[in-house]
Image (tube, rainbow, N blue to C red; front, side, top):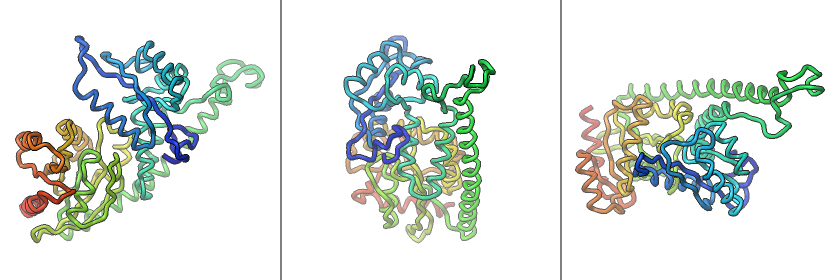
Length: 383
């Protein structure tokens, strides 16, 4: 988390992990019951915080039909959150949802610590994991898109109202130094975004030329897609003997890795792509669109699923939603159920009954890889 813009004070540069509180709204129906995905979402938020180098010390959960428009949770829960932050010494509050600028401001004023949302946390993780210049460019574009509507001043030095001697006696309503400073920040961010988009356009054209060259050479392409931490990079390594980075953390892979694979005399390219997650920030989808085009332009999408995950079916639905959003919903799909070495047999059988035609494998042990290669060769040769 070095240089994290969540805390903005370089706290991540020390060995001590910054502490955080989680706050979530579990959407309850009229009977007060919450859906089965609410606890899964909070568990995922804990993993996201851990991936970003934060130590979660406690959490506050409220069951209500919808988030409070002013403070996300109700007034009583805000008081509870403030008392918990003071007692635990938490440095950060993370909301399991996307907050409006007004909600952030109101929560920070009442709780007394920095408040961020799920989107900001994911952006911070992406910034930490981007390795190539293209990846860093795309993340910075997403950060600017997120930050622009949230720019605001803190304290008297950023007052938005000028008057009296401060404004040359012009009276109330004249732009004060705070407002002018904010306008300068916005202008600089917009100018930076323009330069980044120009660079991104050139990278997009280069990627398109590479795809056209592969198409001319009649080399079919397979895009490896799926939920984050499903084992996509490990599967690529097992297929190709490559050494793509494999970590048990969310979003370990942001930069596409392209490798050539030969299966039963069929040569094709396999591209490892960024993993998806619930409520993937639209800023990231927009910024990574050129990278995600590797999926929409592929001959086959190999959708890797962590079969051992209790919410595997929900993860499949989430990935399908993002694929349709980026225009890849019509790309032929091969579902690959990974991690069968740690998946209960009855659960794997249930998944195979729901998704007939899926291939069950273990990238760790190599189980099922011969069947996967044969299936890939058959699907691509029919193309």
